Length: 134
Image (cartoon, rainbow, N blue to C red; front, side, top):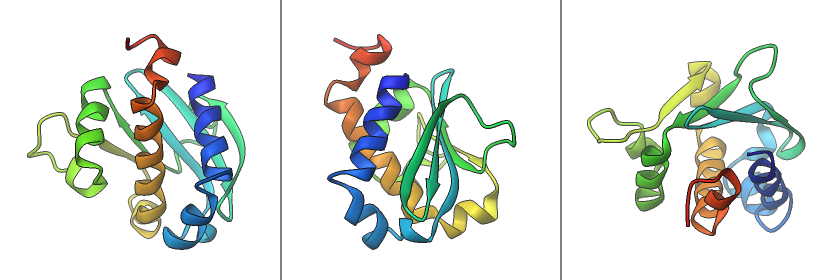
């Protein structure tokens, strides 16, 4: 899972950096974004849209903002590519928000883009890194 988190960091600081910072307002976010895949969690520490650190698990201070779900939930997200639709409890295999509701609402666009990039990494073979795919 650590390799997957590093791939996400590299994408958000690399080829997706301008889109994350400018189009999805990542430049206004400083804090931690956590991602949960099944029982595994990793956290990206972000300062003004740049990922400065990656760690396994949740920070000792708790989850700032984040998204979690099982393998089936992330697979459904990869078809929808919409975080707001994927969070709806009416959908089977919906994702769930973690952390502070107000912070999440204020930074929803940046979190949604992070989830799309994470989903792309999973689709491109990232599941092999956590032993869940062919």
